[in-house]
Length: 356
Image 1 (cartoon, rainbow, N blue to C red):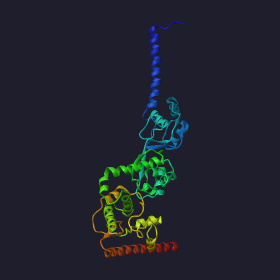
Image 2 (cartoon, rainbow, N blue to C red):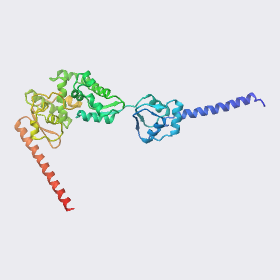
Image 3 (cartoon, rainbow, N blue to C red):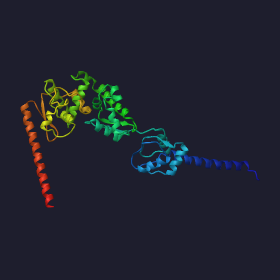
Image 4 (cartoon, rainbow, N blue to C red):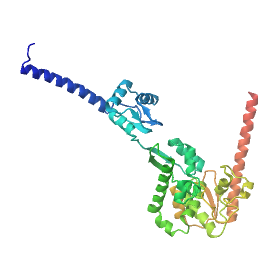
């Protein structure tokens, strides 16, 4: 065996180191390449249970994210990430194997947008939250029962808690518990009241609970935000004159329906029917938005006592009952005309159907 010279040994060592660096460099680039996993459009991967590397590849295929399955499994084994936790994980311009796999293995989720709309009841809000988060609607509805731990801790009824579900868009984790979600939204409501409206509330003739009750009626009644301070002022005028509110939304709430009211509906005996009771109803009828709350705390000052809807969705406001009767007659005339047009259209459609 011919011994290698020192120069030859150094040369061979250099070749070995070169290929070693090349191998590890290639592996490093593959593992930390910021474009290893890409999506043509921003998308999110939802894991509703713990899964392994093979199932992860199938999940990525199902949402249209192209990935080399063999390389994905190789990367997971090299990095030591083989099991992944429940959650919502975003894939935007591109992400490396190391970041993507380690985040899912440790359950480091990306928050998503959760929207709360005004005008909800418990069933509607619970269903809306369930469509945006992992828990089902029954789990959310449970938080709004009078006996829920959260309601009792906050010393609120379920309806009062619902009314404090401030309409807004929130950043939340998909796996957040229903209690955590509802508590977070309630805290946002408290922060708004304390930071923005503490002064107006301290000057108001109403308590916070009364403000929310009246704001919920204003919110249901008004289609236009610009009208909310005027509607609020009208209701306050009626309360200050010991007149009944006679607010149609409270009748609809009592009936449990959203439809055009009939004359007999106004005589429906119910503690929320403000055509039958004096003062405010015993609780809120929906979750008002900030503009409705502000309208009650800072109402428009005027002498209006009556209002009636218009075809455009606004209202005609009146100071006297005679003015109100005239506006109501015009509104009823318009409604009857719409019914006439509808009947004529139905007869024409029936005639054309018979001829064909």
